[in-house]
Amino acid sequence: MPATSNATAVDARTFRIEPRGPFSWPMAVDVLGHFGPTGRHVPDGDPETAAGSVLRLAFPLDGDFTPVAVALRFEGGGLVGEVAGTERVDAVAAQVARIFSLDVDGSGYPELAQRDPALAPVMAAFDGLRPVCFTSPYETAAWAILSARISMAQAARVQDRLIADYGTRLRVAGKDAWSFPTPERLLEVRELPGAAAEKVVRLHSVARAALDGRLDAARLRALGDVAGPESLLGIRGIGPFWSSGIYLRGCGVADVFPAEPLSIAALGHLHGLGDQPDPAVVAGLTDRYAPYRMWVCFLLRVAAGRGIIPGLAGREMAIRRASRG
Image 1 (tube, rainbow, N blue to C red):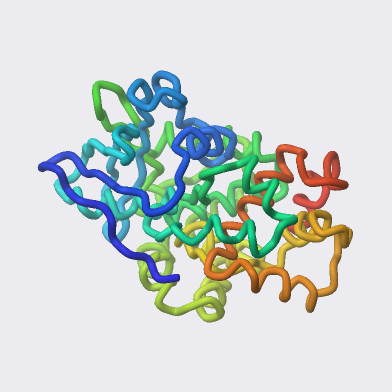
Image 2 (image 1 turned 120 degrees about the horizontal axis):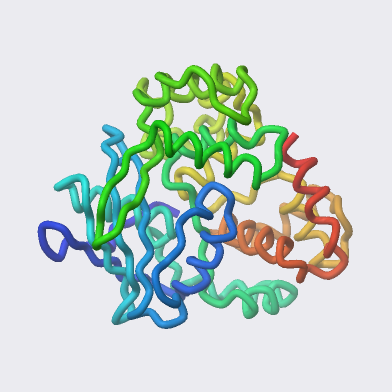
């Protein structure tokens, strides 16, 4: 499903995004807080009370990697953002829309519960949840390197140190927010406490790929579902699992169900088929989910992590580790 723009600039520093179809801001914030690469982003106030919750995000902007920050709040049925660090409010709005999958019309998503009754209880348990993506393919690739062969908690600590030493501090809506290092700054890293020396080499490879335009979200989306991930395999340390992850979760692609073990196992257990259902059966099931196949994949992974997929509870971490390789 192609992305479309539903973000508008309100003034020189503010934008508003109107969700099309169901969207739960509290669920998005909850997932963001439990996700290793973004767990440092904690809102002010209670996200259940939209007017009292402000979430600050900071990241390198698509294209030129300018560090920017945005303070987000949900009010009047829309997501409002106050921008710092750039005058390109529209560009920040478009990136935020992609991060929260608000660049996709989700009006048809609830119909999937009728197409697949086994999925309906999971959709009801996470009503309004859309995929929460990485801020960019560049940060996805960096996380792939940082998180290799260590726990998510360990990787988050290493990332926090990297951001503290090489990132950019910005002030938005009265408080500080820290952006991930730009590619130029990443190339200055010589050692990173808690990480093997090879990871620094691989981070440099990610930085060079970003500067060469190989991690540009628009470019990767234009290449498509096969050539997009394949184009990333030449980046040192990026294999098939993470080339797919960068493409799907970094670019916000909506209609691919990846062949990775946890998603397949969750789908299998949901339909009483076990960990490894027949690929032809998987294809038949996931065809029902078009054009939201990645949304369902994300939903199943969140549900598996919360232990609510029948028969999978307690085993999802072992399957997840196997899937990372």
